[in-house]
Image (cartoon, rainbow, N blue to C red; front, side, top):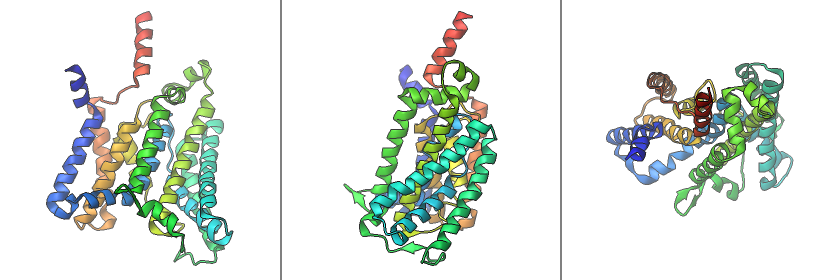
Amino acid sequence: MNKLKKILFRWETALILILALEIIVFGAINPRFLKINVLLGSINDFVSTCIISLFVTFVIITGGMDISGGSIVGLTSMVLGLLWQDAGLNIWVAIPMAILVGGLCGALNGFLVAYTRVQAMVVTLGGMFLYSGLAVVLGSLSVSSAFEGIGGFPDAFVQIANGKTFGIPNPFLIFIGLAVIAYVLLHKTNYGRYVFLVGVNQNAAQYSGINHKLVTLSTYILSGMSASVAGVVLTSYLGSSRADLGKELTMPVITAVVLGGTAITGGKGGVVGTAIASIVVGILRFGLQMAKVPTQYLDIPVGLLLVVAVAVRGVMGQVRKPSFLNRKFSKEKAAA
């Protein structure tokens, strides 16, 4: 009974109820919204948000911030297109190289944050402008026009985002696979414990023998690589490499992470909440589009959702500590 009560009062349960409410409301407005193929197909419109938010969660748990993911999406797209079209590389060789570029962008962000102690917001804001500028420069080097982008990718590549496996859209399977990896990494390994400890108290982590700078750096690398994976999937979905891909992702990603229960001050959070919240944010935007709300107004409800979620969680105090931290603090309290 107590176990059932704990499940019912979890924040993730509230998110699932919000998701169900969205489906009911938007289904009442437009019955086509309730079709399974439409719902599953909608993941293509917001899978980039889902993928990036999973690993930005790691960054925010350490007490950091990463708003450069959207720019890395565009940069990855251009690198991928140039390597394939202009350099003549096989597309399956170009993909890991493009993801490596995202990892290097994340490493630069993480190095500056961890080793120079510049504020994460300032570093990633600079990174956002730097990477989007580099994407534009790369676009000017291509034989294709910047307006049209680089197209004509092989069918096998286009099917990454537009194909299905056992009737399920591939982007949804990619998202589930990455969510499982992120969950195991954050909640089932010593590395995940280090991430939480760095977010709770960097000095305590250092005294415990944890290289908190290296842990911080690694979270930004993961965030950068996830943005690159999102860039590959988005390029596959659109069938075109463009420098401006992902520019609008910053606000939905941060909203998904915070709405999912990750404390903006660090030390608390989880992958499951972020995964569900990213779908809540994505379905909200998709449902509003199907309700014929103009695109330029879609950020208003997302921003409102972010503010309300933070306020409600602040009042209810439902942000939970990881279980191993609760045990640690309980022992310290008992010893005192």
